[in-house]
Image (cartoon, rainbow, N blue to C red; front, side):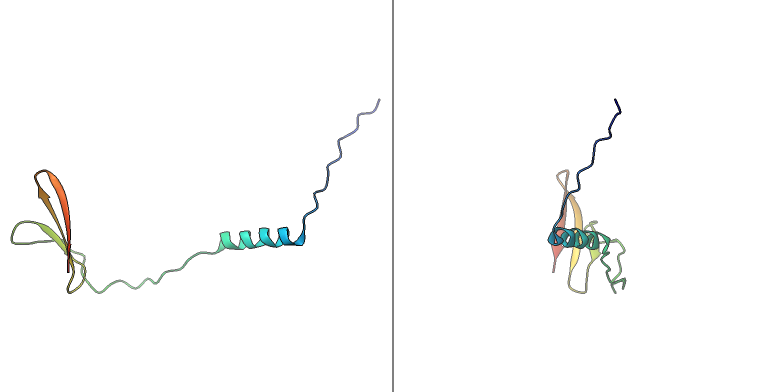
Length: 78
């Protein structure tokens, strides 16, 4: 007896399925680009008169980080 190799069945795909697969491959290869311009404000840590650290986000906004009863609090002010 001769051993026969099993035949592989060919799967028929519709053109719609082929198009979807191609679109998925294109979506995976796209890379988002973002502007690389740096903001105009400084990101240095400053200390206010109460001894709390703060960052200036813009001319009118700042973030203060402080400790209160063992808990870290973050204040965002405008």
